[in-house]
Amino acid sequence: MTLATDLSFGDFSFDGAELNASLLALDAVAHEPVQMKLLAWVMGLPNGLDPAVAARMVLSQHDARISAPLMKLVEVVAQYPRERLARIVAGKRRLALN
Image (tube, rainbow, N blue to C red):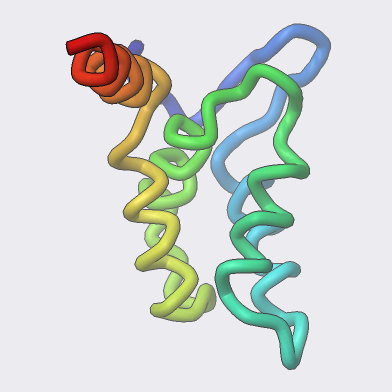
């Protein structure tokens, strides 16, 4: 899959700027751990949208207004697309069978 700045997904059509704005709004919430902010953002994504794809779209926006700790977590999410997670799970299943 190639990363674009616009994404159409089912009935949803949005771009990286919209994903960025939702993450920025969550980042503005005071007294909430960054992990909870990231979880809220991921849970707010449309069903079926790979969080890694959404995270890469946010990273492509280079928005300096989002806090460094939250962006660091977004970078981690971007490294684990569904295909990679599926390989990890398959490898663990094989090890469990041996």
